[in-house]
Image (cartoon, rainbow, N blue to C red):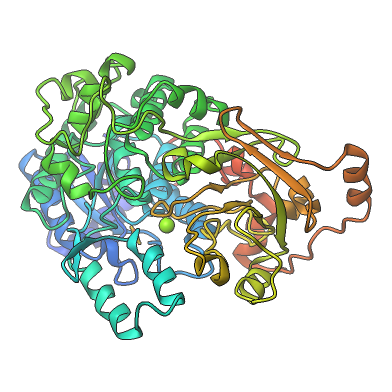
Amino acid sequence: MRSQEWFGRTGKDGFIYRAWMKNQGFPHHEFEGKPVIGICNTWSELTPCNAHFRELAEAVKRGVWEAGGFPLEFPVMSLGECQIKPTAMLFRNLASMDVEESIRGNSIDGVILLCGCDKTTPSLVMGACSVDIPTLVVSGGPMLAGRFQGKKIGTSDLWRFAEEYKMGNMSQAEFIAAEAAMARSQGHCAVMGTASTMAAMVESLGLALPDNATIPAADSRRKVLAHMTGVRAVELVREGVTPSKILTRQAFENAIMVNAALGGSTNFILHLTAIAGRIGVDLSLDDFDTLSAKIPMLTNLQPSGEHFVEDLFYAGGLPAVIRELLPLLHRDALTVNGKTLGENCADARCYDPAVIGTLENPVKPDSGIAVLRGNLCPNGAVLKPSAATPALMQHTGRAVVFENIDDYKARIDDPNLDVDPDCVLVLKNVGPRGYPGMPEVGNMTLPAKILAQGVHDMVRISDGRMSGTGFGTVVLHVSPESAVGGNLAFVQNGDLITLDVPNRSLHLHVSDEELALRLAKFTPLELGYDRGYVNLFIRHVTQAHEGVDFDFLRGGSGSVVKRDSH
Ligand code: FES
Ligand code: MG
């Protein structure tokens, strides 16, 4: 056992490694070779989606004790999507460094990652991959669907409420009532937003037990899953199964195809690419398009459809979706319970065809994520067809340009803004370096005067991200971003732009000669972060198509620490 390099020592070092641990009341035999299972906890009252994790950790511990292991819980940086400014994405890599060093530096043989709110999953998985000791994930589970004015609601309704409020159709009092009605139980967002996309990602990658993705947070079976994950962690350590044995190229391909069938978040691309970079699997932006091209949308979940993640659980959960997709997946991919992906869903059944369709009769023919290319995005941009308007999938319009988020906020509702529903809204400087941190502002709310015409979608283009709960004909992740001199920086008001999703292209109708002239006049943005973490971030962050990880964090450093602390 790795932990014996701490607890199994004689003399002064062993004394130091054990003695202070004993102040927690552990008898000496706990230190004599039991598998030590770290429980990496993102509990925080500032991450409300993970606020029930102390209870969840207790269930994990019961399982670890039962299986003869020794559980030790530790906290890591927790990123609350809706609290932390300027965007949780700015700190995903920081949290991953915390996780990596906490795992490597401590006396643990295996680790269970407690993940919930959006960034808490990729940051923990990225960090764990760079160490590569046996790792399992327990997600916190989705909230119960909210209820407001007689209707079920979830996070995606926020975007509709915001429009209604802007139009004066919803009062501030109704807003406040809707807030409480939406977030009425523990758990993360109740729709197939980024948190549930990430929970499904870890399940389809094979890093979590079956049903991890969908059991509601408030359902007692979530604790059973946590308990069983604790049991399994001890066995996984004994078997020596590390993430690099689970996270093969095939596992990544499975995750991409399952995500397509779910209509999962566009953030999936950034996080999965970063995870692949840590574990050393080659994954390109084009893989997401190629692999999801043959996958229809199998589930009818918000924001692309109607239902909630809770409903997916009642309909059979992710195993029922995976079983339907199995002819297209790598069924022999190994998962952390020791069985293959195919074996795990052998008995799964669909109990509600309104929520889970079939390959013959899918919910929508198009799924997944379209990867666009063209002079506006030589290194790619992405769009989620299932959340877009079919009539806008081939569209040419004149650009209405916002130089940055402040410019957008200042002018979007100006009655004199020269805009009509056929225009293309372009937002610059919201990329990884430009903002910095690539915030979720890509699905910018339409101008008030356009909304007043009853129009709810326009083509929007930016180098930023979109909330997994968002929707619309929104082109995101333009790479290279405008702040580093990508062509997005040179778009001017009135330029024509053609979006052609069937042909996967995004074209700015400006000649190469004219673009060269505009480039000659371009001065890179003065970012102005001279110290601290943000300075590190802007110097080392990679572009969207590379996963927005730091260049120096790619790969791993293993689990060995050669020197002692005294
Ligand atoms: Fe935490 Fe949506 S805000 S999951
Ligand atoms: Mg989000």
